[in-house]
Structure formats: structure tokens, C-alpha cells
Image (cartoon, rainbow, N blue to C red; front, side, top):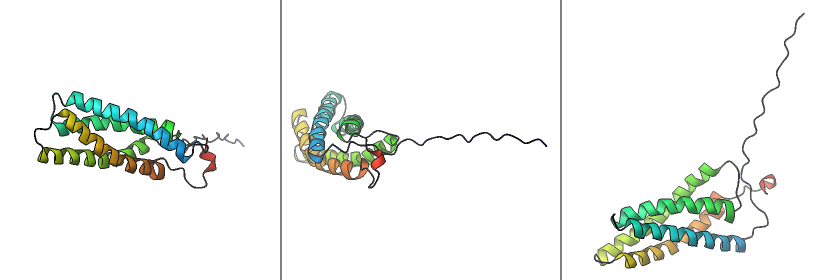
Length: 160
């Protein structure tokens, strides 16, 4: 009687969930978040100032903010929260949700400025963006720490 040999099942490991550094405490995260925020703010404001030469305020703001948000999420993911693994696209999508809040704050600030001071120049508009960005920074940190880059409770195997 002839028997067929069975092939071993192909085992494909899922990408690691979320890995983080258990040694990174709140104070270190806040410091790193501030550095990343400063870099992202320079990207946002620099691009805004450049794009505002040719585009209206709102268009320049959204384009600059999209680029700054991608830079911010990537840097915070890797450096601030020490996250690696296979959830990058999901985390960038969550970062986009936070982007919508930031965009609302910055666009709202520009809209209020345009209503109250229609002839305001780029330096004044940059100050308005700085103020609105400052307000949204707190929301961004809390969202990243508690939602986007949260390490699931009891997932000690994902700590690096």
C-alpha cells in the first residue's frame, strides 16, 4: 500500500504587535515629543511660508500640515515611543485622525484671523499657526500615548 507523504505546514509569523521600550518613562517621552514637535513645527511653518507665496493660506496650511504630520508620526513612532513592528500603516491612519483635529485648530485660527484682520501678512499668520499648534500639541501627545502607540496591557512580550 502506498502512502502520501504530507508536507509540513508553512508557518508564517505575523508581524510583531507593538514593541516599546519599557525604560522610556513619561518625562523622557515628553522631552522626545518636544524635540519631534519642534522639528515638525519647523517643517510645517517653513513649508507654509514657502507655499503661501503662491497659494492661499488655507491651501498652504493643509499641504504643509499633511507633510509635517507624516514626519511627526514617523519620528514619534520610532524615537519617542520606541515602537516597531507591523502596525505602521494603522498608526499613521490613527495619526491622520489626530491630524484632522490639528487641521481644524489651525484652519479655524486662520479663518478667525482672516475675519478679524483680512490684511494680516504671513508673519502674523505664522503666529496664529503657532498658537493653534500649541493648543493641539497637548491633544496630540495624549492621543499618541494613550491610543496610537499604547502597548496593550499584559503584552510584555512586545516590549523591546
